[in-house]
Length: 211
Ligand code: AP5
Image 1 (cartoon, rainbow, N blue to C red):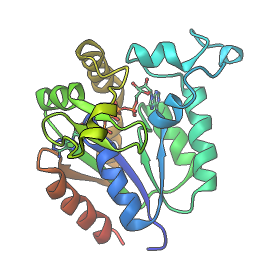
Image 2 (image 1 turned 45 degrees about the vertical axis):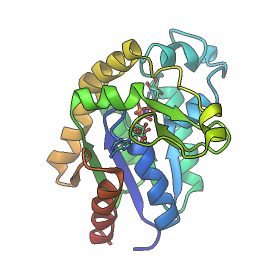
Image 3 (image 1 turned 180 degrees about the horizontal axis):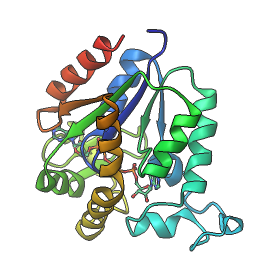
């Protein structure tokens, strides 16, 4: 395979960001993530797009989806510039899945399977290093360096109430996307409840098998 075009699916907290970082390093592809792109542009003016709110912030802080029009444009632009990629956080509903089909072909569609209570535990315990972008967990993966530990921050939408709403939105909107790829016969499931290293072994083998 030249540069692989990889889609990674999974509920909030399933480990998409964690595994995407490994994929980028191993396969030398771009990480295209709508979550990070939107967080970097939370206060972008979208009032000319006939949307309920004027910026992505209002949607994100409540755990709701940002309108398709905004997100489709971000992904289209990013994929045009990427040779190979790991796409994380998109598509999140069937309309976005159809849009993606128009934009590009995919070599691998991965799905990280993790149970609901484990997802809540992972997200409420997640911490980020604002300097390096590294993802930690207070219990599963704390930093060794005390200086790093002191500067860690929690994402605005990782409080328990918003996490539960994000999971509800996932079940309603994104599970049909998983079924869509399953019916198409392209979905590769990975047990996301193993340790991060074990998950990575399975993810890497699945991508290599698709080569
Ligand atoms: P987004 O940023 O995409 O968030 P998400 O899908 O909710 O996923 P997360 O980033 O929260 O989780 P993850 O699976 O990457 O887990 P991680 O690796 O960090 O979206 C945020 C918001 O943006 C949305 O709510 C929406 O408003 C908007 N948005 C984004 N895309 C959109 C779209 N397409 N359309 C409309 N709106 C959109 O891992 C989680 C934690 O678990 C970490 O602490 C990690 O250390 C730990 N961990 C990871 N793997 C393991 C393991 N194997 N064992 C133990 N712990 C682990």
